[in-house]
Length: 98
Image (cartoon, rainbow, N blue to C red; front, side):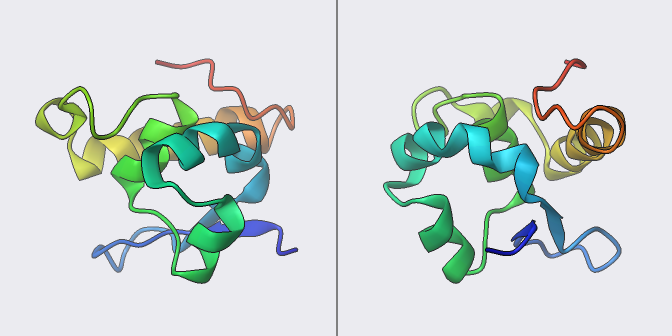
């Protein structure tokens, strides 16, 4: 299995994937939000930054209006912070910054 997970995004200046270790612990939330496994989501092109943010934070994407309070840019910034602080330094995929 690849070490990265693909990102669907319209921003060509931002990352095309994230370390798989960031999303693997959150597969149950992926199933709740999308009805698909991470493998299935990966095969269809991945997740948008907002979808990824919701999965990692265990937020029900379709039940609480998250798209009203987080922008794509904010989601990308948080994902970058998680990767820089948690995945690359400690190997821990649980975000410490909120």
